[in-house]
Image 1 (cartoon, rainbow, N blue to C red):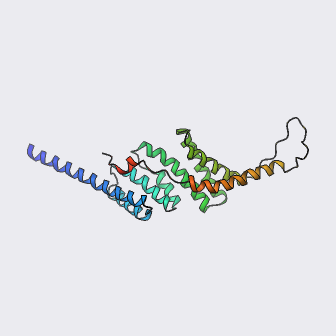
Image 2: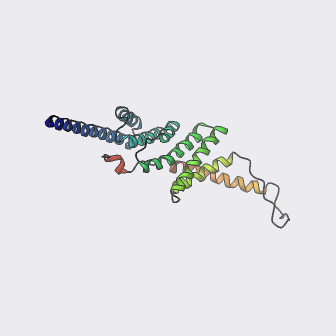
Image 3: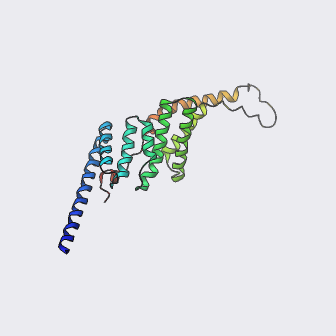
Length: 217
């Protein structure tokens, strides 16, 4: 009886180790494709891993990297949804997913939407950047992206009236549109800077190398 029980335990342990190795190999294969820019292939492999092992040890990391690969394919709405539904299991990735979700929502807004729909997406992106800054006030990327999105939202609103000069007088040479002209100049400069910063900053943060390339067991 004891010998039979020991045999069952040994077989169970062997199956568990084999399953973990299979997950790890699929994960590494998908990561290599993603790092090479082969996002479509990587997406297929991440989904294969998650379909075969829905409760696997790497489900959080695979889901995170799948969302990053969808972002690389410019599937921003799908990427945002994946970041929003990231499985539990990795606190650091969960925090980073919020920032990345903000990026995905912002890019979806800039690319595909106008008017109220765009403003709604940008507002959601701002909320994620605020949360990232509360978690880490030194997060320079989140601060820059927050400013870019905020400026974009302000461009769609009428400029505020020029404030009355202090002391009750009106300075000479300050016409009715003085404040508006300054606002438009600032926004035009921001628009040019935004085009440059969009290419630099609006990209998802990857998982750390140790999280991508080492098994979590």
